[in-house]
Image (tube, rainbow, N blue to C red; front, side):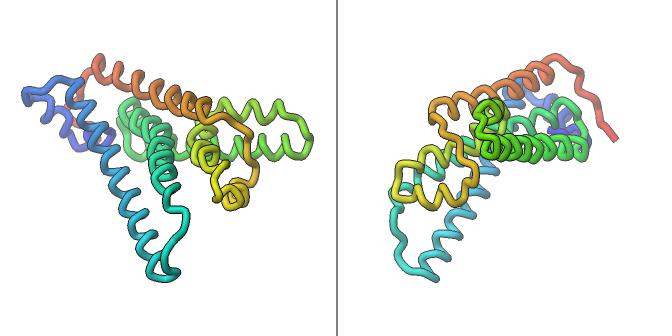
Length: 197
């Protein structure tokens, strides 16, 4: 959204017979679709290389669970980034704040889990569950924890949280809807400048 303001294309698109809501939803869907297409292409490439280099792969029945959970989990930081772009209307500043939110939330969560592991105090772990990164990073691991791939997920997820998949889904939904609703409200109420330099 911020690039639309910087290039002055928002003003142009809104002169067409579409509402602000239609523009916002279509922009959101187009951006998220691009993210999904890039992810799916990466997955197809990795499957092709795995099959080419190592032969037939096992446990592909868990493949779709992983793909769908990762795409669903990416909604949190996609919406935060998209919304920050709408709120600030500056690309570079939006990128910095969105990246800081993503990386900072993951780092704080990992530090809290490490402290919880060292001190054997679960209150730090419960604090980590309220961060935006918890549901989005833990959902794929929670879904695969009872599969034959559980040893691999335990190795990858250094400090696993004993969580519930529904709580992770709720976390993702809440941290997706809040920035989405805020930025949609602001987009529908604020003036659209001709161009931001």
